[in-house]
Image (cartoon, rainbow, N blue to C red; front, side, top):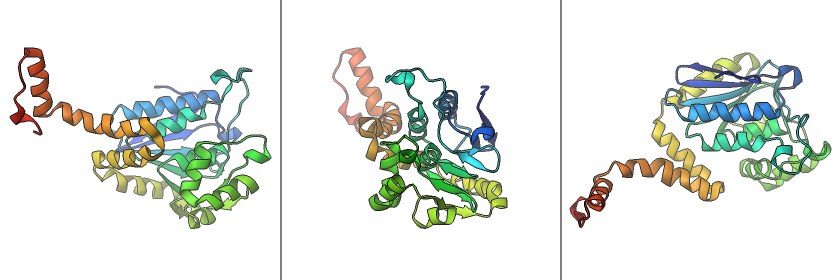
Length: 259
């Protein structure tokens, strides 16, 4: 699948999605949001990739937010930068997603790395929320997920005061998982992802779905019950017997229940 504003590549079990607008801070556009969603949905439908890495092109910016240029003048969906499309696709993906932060992660870029399951960053990376000082806000993923990661008081400080955090400061408060020297980011991320890829794919999918169920409501719970539990049940002797007895208009053989 060809994309205009992102790149996608595979290295064994690792897929890498790169935000590819380095001339503009790798900022989201409407096109990029939809391409990220579509790319992740493609990864979702195959079993080659066991870990997805998301990073930014260049060595200065991971992502510094979104551009609303060209959006329709409407309060409805057509006038909204579809960032939620990206975040929801990351949550739905049964595979672990690692943010590889190669520079500034600001505004929507910081929210993006928060929504990823894990984050590794280079030492010179910078993390910041800037919405209230720039005429915007993220009163959803950006607040709930941030509070989960660093606690309510720190999350409110990031949103109300908008301080810059170094990678070491972000690691110290639990905003990210690991900091590595700038020159080591690529190889360290690959080693990190390969370690995860050696774990059981179904086990990881189940764990991620369980975490997601907390905030996902019926959708989050369905990722456990429908996506993970239902397929196995449909292959069980119980399901087969119930299906056959219904089709044959007879009483089911209950000795096969639970099998």
